[in-house]
Length: 311
Image (cartoon, rainbow, N blue to C red):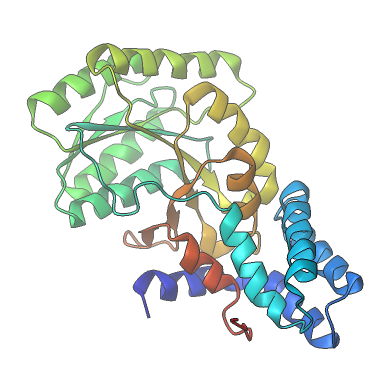
């Protein structure tokens, strides 16, 4: 069993037992695939925070395939559901963490409390395990505690961090960090930004300024913009995510705290609606409880323990 599959099964246990095991219960009550059964699955997916629009698309696809391919056995729906959920999950474009540019600039965004700084630390550790030289930038200058937290993680991980005083211009921190990354032959520069509330227009504009500063030094950067979402907030994260996508040009998602929620199904709806992949997932509290996201194994984990019929 792949390590990720083992970890993901443990981390999404609440989602599986409270949502997808209920689908199994409904399937077992029916002798044939019927509209009643499809309606029950639809209700379970929506109540499981998959999202209305995404759920309706999945159910419509199930209905179409059942009719066209003449499925009758309810247990075949497990196989079809896995395929259709996997179909709506955008593919991680760089599953092995491929980074051709040096320094590779990653801007990390997200609201306070989402697990952003901790996710940066975990990503740093993951990159170090792959032999990458990492530099951190403390561009969340609105809170002194944020700078101190990142500096403490840098100390534990034995990496350098570029910082200014609390209240300094974040763009100035980023400028110095990019120059340092170039001069120190760094592989990856991870930039922490303020925990911007999506309603704070001035802070969103500050984020645009940071992006412009990076582009002046390296025209094609940032190479990645990763949005940290708290998995425990479920579908409530969608509107927040949309604002960051529009402002920051988000390229991928870090889904934090997946182990602590029954709302893991939200990743299906959020990524489908935004057309942005999950790149990484936080699967626990330890520094190495952080993995490159594998959509196929995530879906496999959702249905772990169910009988899945293949053709």
